[in-house]
Length: 127
Image (tube, rainbow, N blue to C red; front, side, top):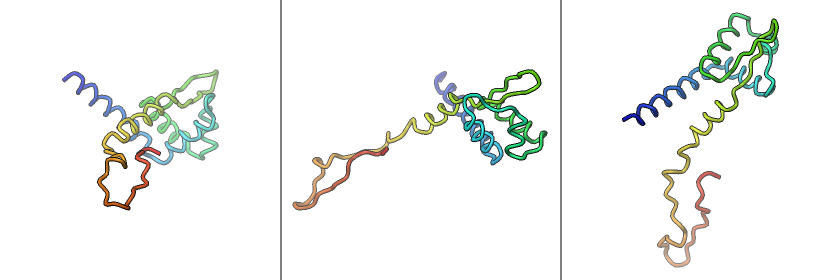
């Protein structure tokens, strides 16, 4: 039971990340910050680049920070935002975790084909 609760908790966390990123401006922010990886960008530069009002940008950045996609580091009067690449990698790994597990590839040699027929399939699912 404990393992199921941990899995459910993990699914909830992953769903929260996808929900946070499921907004066009937030996707633009993540992509922009990925283009400046690993240094990141100050909030003012993000605002200027994406032409988003300061209050709206603040809301989006806070939402992405709350789910762990971004970190914020204060440097004198600026706040620099950086993408947490490990968190994004975790999302990708989650999506591909079950890749091909239900694929029941049958080897050509095991097929019972009538004489003269052949199957040229490679037998690989994730190419």
